[in-house]
Image 1: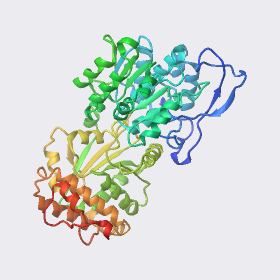
Image 2: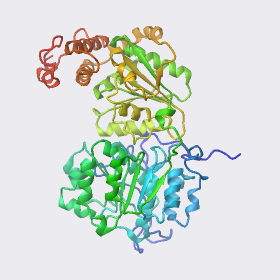
Image 3: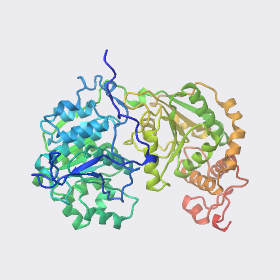
Image 4: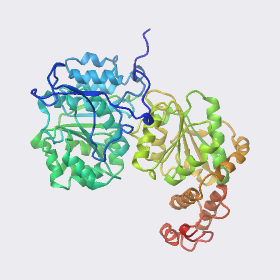
Length: 570
């Protein structure tokens, strides 16, 4: 029996904290094509440090190191989904440029994953339109980057300063992840191929300047920011020689309401009918709304490929799922501590978990508390209240980590792949069954095992009963006595948390749960009473102050129990 077949880095994955340099390019002059191979003896060749201009801002090494393959057991991905044995990238010597194969080898890619193999070996040509159904975490990014980049290397590159490849994806984190892999795949080209990114949350004017003055051969963008930028005529001119348009996570973009933005983007770039660019659409599911967009991106007669086994249970059915119901808010923090300790004792080797909270400020509070209450674990936080640099740094660090706990809000989208997460915990009421399912999907990826536990207080227990299709069972162990033992630990941890952090979490708790007051069967006075119970659990002697204007926006004007005032005056 042979050794396990793996896509894995040669050597340890670089830590985002270490920074690090990308592999050197060789710069050449002359030649029939700007990215063509050159002999090592070509005059003027010199080693340079690879740089990538990002539309969002100058890119830090720690944010976009060259992609190295996360450990992926390719053989385990091959089941009835593939129907064939994995092939090496080396077998594509007549299909892919030698510089791409060299880069893949440096990245640790030896064998193709099922989706990579299907795209690279079953498309009529690498410039054919295709609709590909594949799960996240299976190597989709390389599956669309390699054909589109190869197309440019075969004499189809756009003029300098023009976009040749446009990738549209749902989130900034996924955009950076794709750009990172593009950096790695193009790292051995004789001349650098710039990859730019465009997403919200950054200064528009400086972003626009970098894009217009750069050479964005590849652009990875979210629909909203891209649509905004295409309102400028000089931006639209950058797309005059577009060769490939990719929709990644198409179903998720449409779930988030991006259909109008996508259609507007397609109207603002050269028409497919007149320019004939290649269309590639990747999606985990294929609802009717995906087919509506497909008609605008792919020619009739496009190739359909799938690595989804129709007989395979989806992640939500494969992952063991449990619920822990506590009588009141006062026991939420101690129960979470008891749960983490219990799960760790059962699986201490490489314990890696994600804890989802209901709000960004609530997640920040959890991080502040448990980095004190659980000092044995390496802690991470990821939520929308962090600036983009901090979010990117955390994303890279947790990806590279073999163990640790990430406290997260839903900026951790379905397209983000954190390897080897064995446990997902949801603390508090998920906003919908779909959100619950997406969170559970952060574990048991790429053939690995995982489990999920949701912790709810009594009024939130309706979530389990009203979603009978979700395979949620009661947690097999009574945590109440163990939780009580951690009360002093939690109390002490809260003494070290800033009052401002507690106040923000309290306000966010009120705002979030006000939305679900009817489902929680809470009158507004009772909702405030529960929130005040939450604040007492944090060690607050009285409810944190909330400004009168904020109370009005929440629809809580005149509700007793609120402490009205400005924290800035105290």
